[in-house]
Image (cartoon, rainbow, N blue to C red; front, side, top):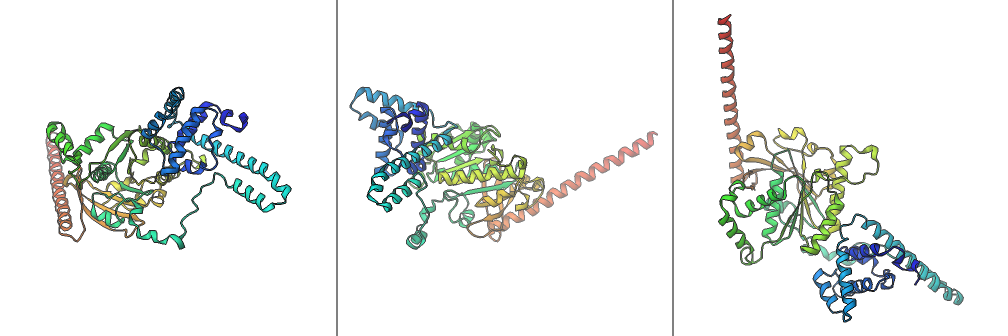
Length: 478
């Protein structure tokens, strides 16, 4: 083959990046399976890695892990070839977070498709002499759709029985039975769920509580924090898993250590080990969806596959490219971020939980509704499930609040639930309004509000009294 018929034309870095795509993107591997061939690579070690990946996929219908690749490379009998392939494999893994992988993917598909069309034309010469025009048409048609997505959708007439398989959604539960019942078991793969609240209302605690509960179910969680540090986020998880106040953790090291060891014990919870947690911090505005996608791919190779992603929180993300720069106001920026995050969930087939700010009116509202979401109403349109968290000044004093279901694609919405929220340990409980606990919580909120109102009135009266006394003294002096 000439250089124009192989990847030699693109150079070594391009081919390393192409192999990194095959090792991190199952979707890309499936799209190129029938059009990307070993001979396109201009180096024997490239061809060796490509062959290992394709043979593994043919057998197990998945991407080989790093451990599998290392073992397969060890089977190479030629020592020089083995060393060369090992070195190449190391180089491949250094490119999995490169920012131009999308370009490499598009160029590869274009190259492979052109080769497919070129081969179809060459094969058509003999068929033309035979007058076999149907075969020519079939060859050209096949070449034209090469590299397109092979999944054309669900054939309902044939596959309607998938409705009986509840495991297909692979929902990850929340700590609250009420929310799980409303959503059909929690957040399903490819879904975006959002908690809305004013600044300081406890949104981050809710997200951490969801992550901690998933860990207890044996799920692997990646928690992206764009606000709190990695260290402080880990303290919150420790508090949620041990029940010890965040500020008391350092004084209870033995209890924390023993509790964490117990959780690692396979017999600790439902005969499952606690899941793995990876916390990654990005400064405000520096991480976009492509950043998280690249990190997730790297984490899958070096750490494991995530069952749940938490982004604390999406409002602080880089919005990425906006088609019409003249429309780059907060409405379009917010909408673009949430559209991208929803796309990330679908691409990875993993549920994502995130949080969003309410507008200023949400700080004093007893119930935050959909029209009080900050910046962009498109957030509500894009998400699958949205609930708000309302905590007035009185609520913060009494550890109370209200959860309002703003949007629910899986069932009822427009419902308000009383909640107990301890912001020192993340202990959060949500109650049915008509339940005994719910009524108790509502009465407590009313009582505390009256008590706080009475205290405020007393303070105001005392202040007014002092002002009057000062006026009298000033008048006497004059």
